[in-house]
Amino acid sequence: MSVPQPPLPTELQVEVTGACNLACRMCLVRYGPKLGKSEGAMCFHTFKEIVDDLPALKKITLQGLGEPHLAPDLFRMVEYAAMRDIRVGFNTNGTLLSRGRAEHLVRAGLDWLHVSLDGATAATYEDIRSGSDLERVRRNVLGLLDIMRRRGAQRPRLSLVFVAMRRNLLELPDVVRLAADWGVGRLFVQNLSHSFGDTDPAGSYAQIRRYAREEALWAEGDRSEAVYVFDRARTLADELGVELRLPRLEEPPADRRTPGTPGCHWPFESAYVTHDGKVQPCCMVMGSDRVVLGHVDRERFAAVWNGDDYARFRQELLGGVPPEVCRGCSLYRGLF
Image 1 (cartoon, one colour):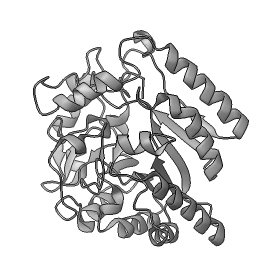
Image 2 (cartoon, helix red, strand yellow):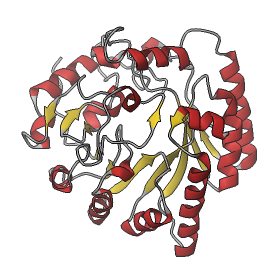
Image 3 (tube, one colour):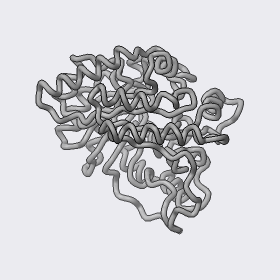
Image 4 (cartoon, one colour):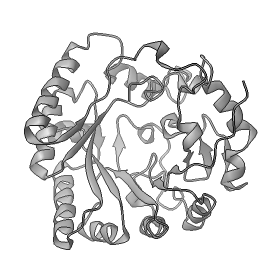
């Protein structure tokens, strides 16, 4: 079956920096060499070239493995995207979201902002996100909301994001309460992104592979506690008026797909570009040494998108056996 060439994407995710000020347990940054603020950053020139190569771009996410607030050109990138009428936003750990930065982001036209909050207590949250400070994040979120109220701003649309794991599961209902107390009306709960089962058990991904096996709610075992906690969180969210998104705990039936449709739409509609210009099929891959379909520092994005490597990757997604890297992906498995 030949794969029709999809049009250039209308959505894109760009890792504006690979540097981070934290060492979160579920993130690859914790287990690999640390990048400095300068060496880990994408420059504005490269960013602008990518954006300008995509005339139909409607949404761009400025995040990857690093903390976006460490990108030297972050505000300039937000301003440029907003000027082009492109919806722009990112995830942040919230520790660097000072009032000055918040003010600048509101003025620049940031469309949405997701703040990670993986625990309701400092002990749990700061253990998962090593180097963080729950009280600082609380102040920063409230500071942003105060600035928006003072300016009469409706944007950025703010959400909290909770990565559900065995070690923090029981605190989920209390995170729902925190979202309501802080005045954040949306809470997005997600599973761990990947099992890393396609990697060498003794290789460089061994630690994060082991962490996923020990902490993932979708791993083999009794899921009754997770079901109970999710039900409690859902009931509480309804009572408090918090919009709550919960992930699946089990994979949907294998025959859920119509024959001839892809197992994942992302490589047909969007792409992920690392801080150093590597083009990957999505952010769920986590690791720029795994699947690289081209380099924007060697050729234009459009040439990569229309290239043979992308075509082969898409072809595999149309079949019953996906690319090896996709087999442990929570998004591909319907669990994210």
